[in-house]
Image (cartoon, rainbow, N blue to C red; front, side):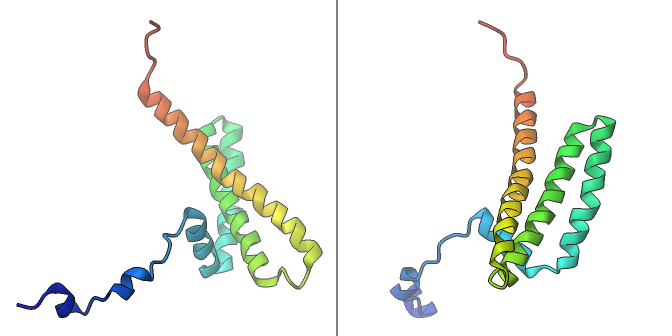
Length: 129
């Protein structure tokens, strides 16, 4: 009976060529750069009015999620622009990097706050000892 190494031709070289596991930022960047820019515009332009409408009605959780989705679209547009044409216009690239950082923060902070709030609500109120 053949061993596993002989049967599938597994060598030690395959184990040495390890690729680091992608982070969430790397996955999001690859997703944004591979998608059609029209989808990013649609995400940005559809989720932002919904976020404003939900905030005006007082539905803060829905507004937070919509704001995060809209900010992801804005972050994607800025990241895509930087990847494609930042070297053509360095002065504009500086402002787009700032806009990308702000949009990235707006895409991350509301979901973290909302998930933390949901977790604390699941814990309930502990009695004071």
